[in-house]
Image (tube, rainbow, N blue to C red; front, side):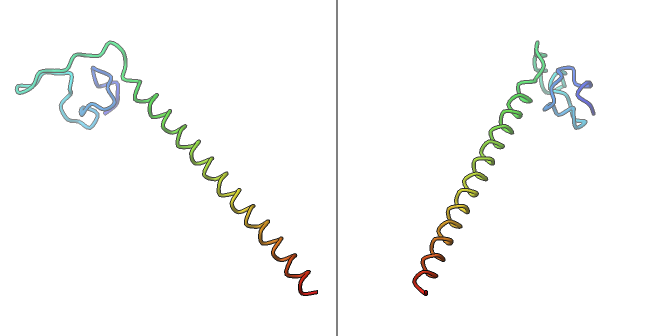
Length: 87
């Protein structure tokens, strides 16, 4: 089913999976009111969460790179010291 088929234009509505729609009355339940604006805030929230996750991943990658760089400096200095002592 597509988003167009839902009269509430709700991408989370069960009618997207072929079940009963939230926005239509059934014998046992009353329909939800049809929203005046599309349910796009979920999309915006999802995009914001993806951006935040990318920022965290970039910070984590930068931290790992700094740690590896620091370790390589320590190894280089230690190697030089050992060579100088050996000579």
